[in-house]
Length: 433
Image: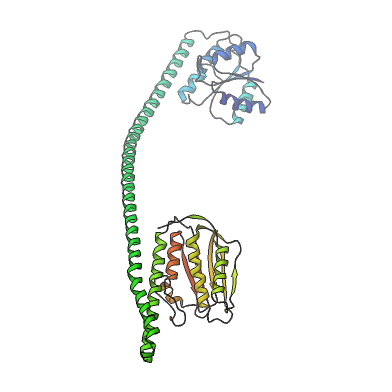
């Protein structure tokens, strides 16, 4: 069977063509009624499947012309539409001479069945154009169907126009709200930038004042302490013979306390300097730093036999000067608190926690009670007697400030008599002042 498909939508034609050719039918295509009439003159055709809404000549008129033709009036004609779908539309199509009225999308089986049924019931040949008054009645029905469809389309367009108008009003309101929000955001950004500049200027001024104060404290406090220590040394050297044992002991205490106060001042200045120094961030080989510090500790007490286990290739990104100071304090603490351990061991390395490196310094020394761990990083807070483990209580506070400036965290785990492990991370956030 040779079938002519008439539809102005190329996709619709292609889908229908594939369906029919899969059933072994031969298919020819046309985009409207005028093109289809030209094809009928050239191609052998057994059946027509036509859409209704098409340019130049629609499906109703095309059907009317086919039925009015002496040559083609016998052809099977199926109207296939998704636009003209009312019962009145179907009546017009059948009155125009269509054999079947199908609505898109119909199942392939229904289309094939309709073609098969029409092939079994050939249409009788008509003499030509449908004579009046029947022809006039058909054209009247045709015109009424077109008018009805135009009215429906007009109503649809009016509805869509109303919806578009409402949508446009909503979009206009939203646009105004967006502009207002944008303006508020810009104003907020300007105000925020101004506040940031003001705050930065205040912090810079405060830092300068604090730095000046630190220098003043260093000079004003160190000078009398040096004088106390110096005069004590003179008295001990020149008047030792005239001093009683209690006097000599008191003089020694004066000297020791003056030196201890000097150490406190030096520690406070070191703690303050951590905040003044500008960070220079770059790759730092912590393994090399730890080995250097370990060698310095060995030289300071060559009689001590301390095992160092320093991990290889431990790298970090940070300020080399400050990171060295942090390691000096942590390794120095481990060295100090293993002073009474039979086989002292100090370890430095790194481990992974959720993909991030965590650095640690571990020892098997005196350890401490975790109940007092919150005091570890506060200046002058000590968990051991100064007579057992001397120090000024500034080192761990300095470590914490250095790690915080690198955007990291520092914490410890320990048990009395079982050593301690200090952990720290770097660059978890922006470097801080």
